[in-house]
Length: 163
Length: 106
Image 1: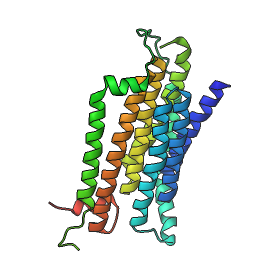
Image 2 (image 1 turned 45 degrees about the vertical axis):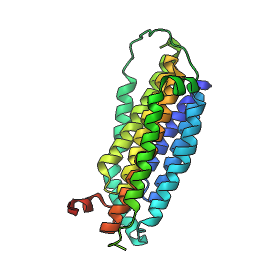
Image 3 (image 1 turned 90 degrees about the vertical axis):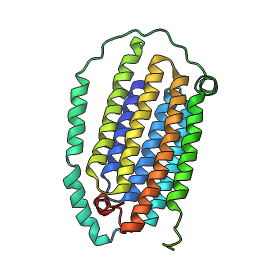
Image 4 (image 1 turned 60 degrees about the vertical axis):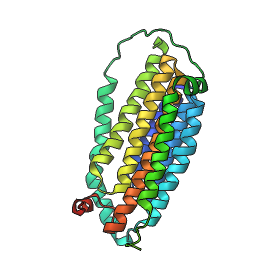
């Protein structure tokens, strides 16, 4: 039963990613991206990673789609008569992707992984690792976030001669 | 890796590869800049799943979670800056087509 659920989850994840990429309307792509994130969150919960799963759910399924939707709202809308042409172009461009996925899946299922026994590892607490062993990562995160915030301020700021 | 984890690793490893192919294909074929960012997001989802999967099968869940959280934070910063660049391009060219960037100078 557990394996069946795993298979269903991974198939749903790939289908959601495919739907995200292949949908004609951008807003549907963003919704597909959020669904992909939710499915990834469920997989993370099942793999004993609840903290990362909560991050994934709140940030990748909440914040990032909101950013994308506001971007789509700020940029031009597609006229309804353009949609048919867009759909045709989309089919022309993406028909190869499902075929490619099936070929790769068939090829990979024939590969058998060698059994390697690694040294015994312990499942330590994520807080302990994040705060005591990987402080540089934390500093890096703070720097990246600050750089991102400053970058957005600089890029979005309107210049006086443009206004 | 414990023997009972090998089928799980194979199954989710296949999922990782296919998700990354979807994201990469989108990045390579699309001309819409917002859709390219969506492709980048899907590619990152594959990487996140790979980190969590390797942490789970090797028994180092804590380390994998901390790396996944770092990845998510960096992903957000990258997306936010990239979106603001897209908006800047839209202001200049009135479009979000990647071909319009060719005309930008300076």
